[in-house]
Length: 299
Image (cartoon, rainbow, N blue to C red; front, top):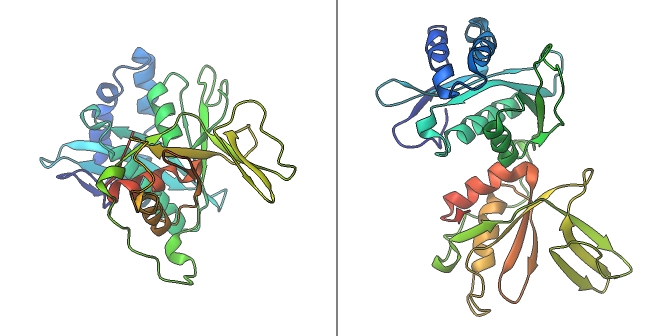
């Protein structure tokens, strides 16, 4: 059901009997966020009906001893036939940072794609900075804080992610190569801060303001620079140990092949010391998983 959980953990769809188990861990897992009012708010967000009527689109993860390790409660929107919604997610604090939460989201994304959904939405409270950072890492776009979104005093941040079509359903014009093992020199990558845009300047005029890279060619200048609010957003990966020399073969290919196998678009720019590889922010999770499976560490 979920292929990339840490060893020993198992996943399944919930049953009605899981409802009291989930309620029992909420306050502890959230560290008492917002005190007694927060505890009541969280409990009210998870009535039993979610475990009765949305079990097929939800997941629970268990420790080897059967204890609850994580859960995701989601559903396919009845009002918006292209949308799916993640209602509530929780991960045992002892497992946070292990990839369990991201694995749950990837499983939900796959389920949504199978049902023809192209947009995933969810919300969190502005105080939950950990949740906000987590969703940003997955590629969600966050709204400004929306006052009274869920009622008086219940402000929310709304997250939206546009899913790419399921690669398995796309026509294949040529075999996709198997990911090549990464050379030892290239097993570390840095995810640079910020998000970037690609701009083409036919007049080849030099870039103004902040920019990451500029490549001049006969048809003009291509600039990689910080993205504006309405531009397509890219993330930049850079060799964690640059200055490896120009005579080491296969370094760029080792990065590009697993990304191609995962169907992740790329844009590259090479310097004297290393290569910058850009991937769409909305494909962040797919890109990082494919690189991890190819032997890379990304920090």
